[in-house]
Length: 462
Image (cartoon, rainbow, N blue to C red; front, side, top):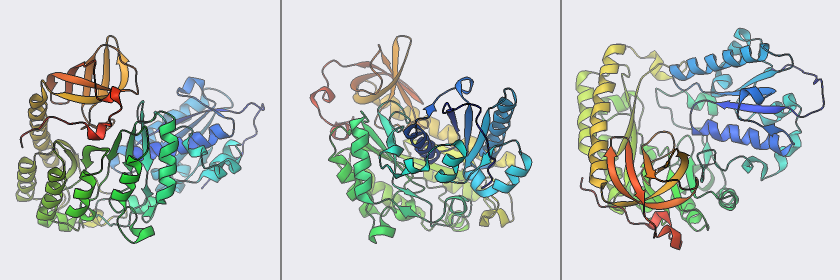
């Protein structure tokens, strides 16, 4: 991609700030770049005021994400213009797809790079591309980026599916698994830095291994990760329903240190809409997979994501989705409205749904989900759960329980200040839809070395 040459006025390595937009995969990309720069002796900073260079890691998944990416790039350009010698670069999914257009609209950018274009980025920043040869370099910034005690472990990149609403294959290419032994080695290094929770990510995770080993290997990977001393929770994000048969879900549920949680984005439940979306599954198959995970282990959380307003979605289609959500009662859920993406099959479909109609459908589902979450949380009052502490605010500690991933799920407020990055047993004393209140329990199984994945959780009726 495009790059402008720059001669530094001094020999001091620049201080670099990376602004990350979008999903956890972008977080990993930003951490990779930060680790490579740190390996070269560069200083990574958290605030613009401290930086000489700002890198914007863009997202192009939906229209709102594109708008936000452009706004942040514009703000970074204004920051650059306020002081001589500052530089601004852009990378990520949006620049991968729309790099030439962005360069034409924002010539003030000092460089525009696609996904994983590390050599060119390091050269533009004046860093040593040879730092990429170190297997540990990409890990130097991992610890804590998902929160104290947590780290993302990206097991694959790209996607070989062709969902009609998604442009990810255009931006990140076909599905590519990382070698299993390499991932285990990375996880061991992370554990040595104090990481207790591994968040398993990829464009979709349940196809892991199919390209390298000709079979699904996610359960085997998780079993290997479960053997690592210091790792307490293994949390699976981005499971793909068409690639998640009941047998795999049962195997995953039985992994010793697996957090009782899986992210299982159904997108829709109407057979007609699933076909239009090119989701190669069905309502009954998804129900079977969900049941297998729930039956394989008590007290699990199944998180989902649904998409409303896709072209052709009728009232009947939506009601079928609503009924499915009511029946399954997902413990966690996110709802989005459709926005057409250039180059996808969905962008060419007729029968667009009016924005107001789509927003009304989103509101109905979110009201349903809020009540489900509240009901679940009320059932937990008086029970004991493990919580990973993330931060202290005033006289309280905030963290996450086994059912909650960073940024997208509920939080637990614990009385008193506990060290961030540590796991504690707490007793639930209060409940809201997206928050639990708790008090710490002095004598906990965690302090005796028992893993979170094996700790009993309260049995909740469904």
